[in-house]
Length: 514
Ligand SMILES: Nc1ncnc2c1ncn2[C@@H]1O[C@H](COP(=O)(O)OP(=O)(O)OP(=O)(O)O)[C@@H](O)[C@H]1O
Ligand SMILES: [Mg+2]
Image 1 (tube, rainbow, N blue to C red):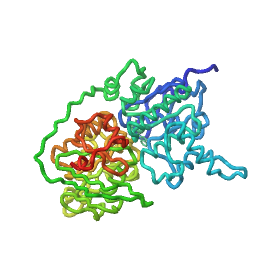
Image 2: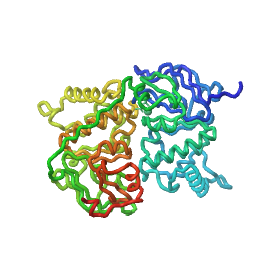
Image 3: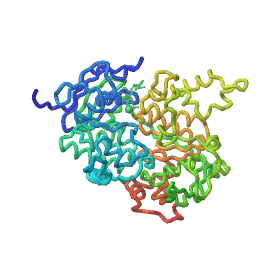
Image 4: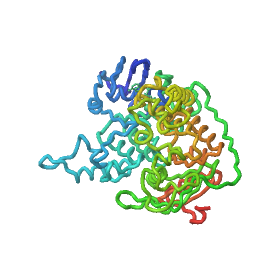
């Protein structure tokens, strides 16, 4: 067989999970040396299709050709052998190992007597990180890293196996705009070296910036493949959703000046090593206000979230919710006053083993709303869960299946739906639309805006600048654990915000507190 133009050809792929047909007769071809994007709504079957290509799932029907050769990809090992690498939507790293150990896993450099050469492992990882523009400390432990850094390790791990075809499942969902740019530079360079990149993303702007071809999946079926030049973000959204994605600007209700609902005073937080991660952070959020704490991942946002919700003790300062000093209260006590959408749904947002119903009720199962004669009334909780599934268009095969069998974006919708419907007047929201499709993102933004307009005090943490500029009433920027700016979105450009986020510019302390 001659040289094929195609790196990947998937023909007539079908995949059935119980009653759900995740892929229906999908044809998908990727040219050598191109960046090919796959887009589609949450649950459209994108991850399933790529898991089949990477040998993690067996298709119910269909054929695969790699470089023109028919192949059976029965395991990830087989896929790696065929030169296919995959960066997953959910991290698959060993928490107690270092970055270098994870990157080199399975192909550890060895010394003269066959022992693993740790020094070489670190040197190799450092070189790979530098060469690919994905900066990281090779000796850091995985369990100490933020979500953004974990993603870098995943990408490095795939690169280290010398993949010729690299699949990335929503790699940018957890990256900052700057990190995305850096990643795209890496991907473009790889493509120019005739490597083939398959990229799943919900960010249509990104698609238009990097992809050569775009394949649209909708409810398990392909809606065709387009050349980047012959389409635009609007058309892609329309093809994905089956309707136009024109969104009205938000109505913002104005509120009379009042006492803040959430107050943080001179907060200090140290990590396990005693390093100060938050330095004298003070902020206040009023009813009907969305305050965003922006910043590059790793500058203290995670510590701020954990301190607010009670997952990390503070080394100084106070936190007040609704006029109550909650600094030393339990997580449970705090959650009665404050809803919380965590940044990492897999770690803290969901119990993947339990059902969609239980996850939608979790934390609120003692609510008097569900009680009948002092007992939890299953009919009421079920009706509530069913309604949330409807309202948030959570694609699931009923409320009694395990949350783990939902697609990534649909899992995220469970957390958002649950927390927003609690109706607390303080809402702490981290990365609410991470991994969520265009339509569902809009819906989530509407829910957040509605909560604001009903007088909820909202603290938002997001690496998505579009989201920050769209939702915020005010933005404060964290840099190296300190607040360095306090601005209104109308008064700042994304570029200027970037300068504060990278520490290139700071405001005077009295301006930050104004
Ligand atoms: N292991 C599984 N068991 C049962 N159903 C599954 C399983 N994996 C996926 N599904 C179902 O298959 C469908 C497609 O899921 P998939 O994860 O491929 O979607 P996706 O396009 O990647 O969505 P997202 O954008 O949310 O990540 C969904 O309805 C999902 O619930
Ligand atoms: Mg997916």
